[in-house]
Image (tube, rainbow, N blue to C red; front, side, top):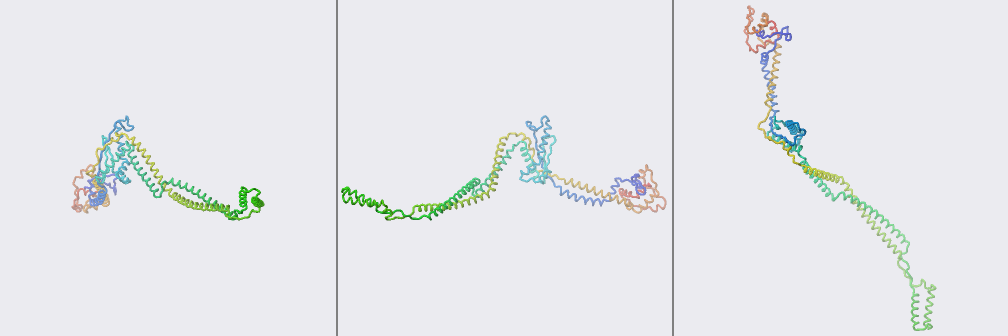
Length: 528
């Protein structure tokens, strides 16, 4: 029988139930198992392949890769540091590696984003880092830069921006003395200083202040002077009032009018008599009766005067007491002075209050003024320092153009005409994976089904014929198994066996080998 003919031997490691040896699987057995589970394999393949292919189609987008080439030249007058005596090849490799690292640096990507007016967000930098690549052309001093983008134009624009940022940053690192950057910083510092100065002037104008510090010092001096003047005025007021009060007290004990003098004609009469005697003496002798009579009158009047009989006699004249009048005048002056000093003290007090209010207002504005003043001063000083640095950098700017021109753009990035996509490869890999998983599942299911009940796969007449064959057929020697596999099966002898032989449906050549699995096949192989 065919199951006996396909038996390859037995061993202790392949022993089956009831002591029979389990036969080994070959390629035809695997194909037969797969064919028996073809529907399951197709279903599993479709269920696995469609989701994976769809995911690959939607996840893997087409990528447009723009390319640019840079030529790196060596300046024989300005070799790389430490390259003396190392050889030209080593120097070229060193320079190319340095240029590649500089081109692929994070600073260049940030500078490219900033030069385009964007913000270097971490997500943008990460996307640029993964999409940008730098490679060296073999046996050439050429750097090949590439960038993959969603659209051709965006890929070319981003790559050109990176190349331009690299050239600018390279010049700044290797050649530039910082004059341009200092110029930009100086312009910004001057603008900031002008803005701060404008804010300070607007603050002073708004608060009606010309010079804050000068006005504050002048206000302090003025307050001191006003306080001193106020104290002096108050003291003068008190002094004048005290003097006026003292004079008033003295005037109360002093009469306002006094007797000035007393008028009498004794002296006049005596003088008149004396004048008349002189006249008479010119006409008469001394012993003349008129002269003697006049002498007697004169003598009598003189005796009256000498005796004091004429004192206090006569017409009395009274008037204002001059002392009282003088003291009263002094009192009035003191009272006027006291009133004037009091009025001055009141005026000084008002002015002092106004000065104190102004001082309080300036004290409240001092913090804001100090902040604006410090800002204007610091920004002015910063602009001055930057101006000095810019002047020094401009004077040092030299002609080191060899290093700056050692990298030249051979080919700028242009929008690529064709996109690169991994969809085909991913879909193919998904198909292979889905097919492998489906075939493996089908083989496992077919194997377990065959080993669990292999005789169920055969027709009834075939199972009875196999039972008779297992009972009467002796196993052939090993050297003749191959020959026996090509010989026709022996016809059964006797009517009893013939009665059980029925024509069976002939299965496919490959599917026929599936019946060799299971306990029945193992039993048959033991008697073959």
